[in-house]
Structures are given as C-alpha cells and as structure tokens.
Length: 143
Image (cartoon, rainbow, N blue to C red; front, side, top):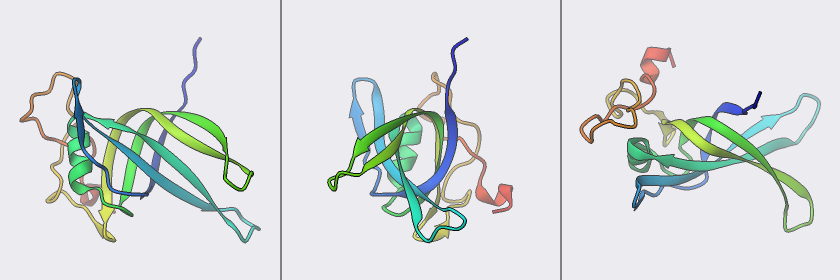
C-alpha cells in the first residue's frame, strides 16, 4: 500500500505572497519558517518550508500575506537535503500539494472573520463568486 506524508504547519512568511497567473489559473509561491527550541539546548532550530498555493486561496494569500505574517498551511510534504554556503548540511521541507492555506496574523494582529470571509474551501468546480476561505475564523476557534 502506498504511503503519504501530510502536515499542518504554522509559521511566518519570509516575504509577501505574490499572485501570478498561468494557463491553469491563479497561484502564488510561499516560503515560510518555523522555529523550535529543543529542551536542554541554547540554540533555536529553524525549519524552512515552501510550496505553491492555487486558485482562490492564492488570491486570499496575495491579499493578506505580508512578510512576517503568521500562516497556517496543510498538505502533502517532502523533505529535501541541501548544503548551505558554509558547507553545513541543512533540510528544507516542501509542500508538494497545498490543500489549505490561511493567514492567521499580519503585523502582529489576528486576522478575524471580518477581514477574511469564512466557510468551507471552494471545490475544484467552484465559481468565481464562491469566495470562501478553507478555515473557520480565529474567533470561532477561541484564538
């Protein structure tokens, strides 16, 4: 039986999400990072993430996502190993398919349901007027 690696990650954007269009529709590439401090270690470990957001979600990300914005991303992931300029090995985790993406905070302030429409994620056949994001507003989650 085939296996698949999926994840939901919350992190901060390296830069703004820039909306682009091709023959298949709208998309934007996002790059963001997370950090962990391992117990007993002084150093924080940073992990780099990236992926492409498609369709209406790309439009929401481009509208609401600025450098440093806190985002939540869910989808299928892949681990890549690379060498830094100083010769040390590092890892990058790429989303090979992003199924959901949402801006949680921008400029340190929560994005609530008034700034972002609420409701279920649009399906592949959704019309252009079906402008609902994939997650519930933060206030509904008690955040």
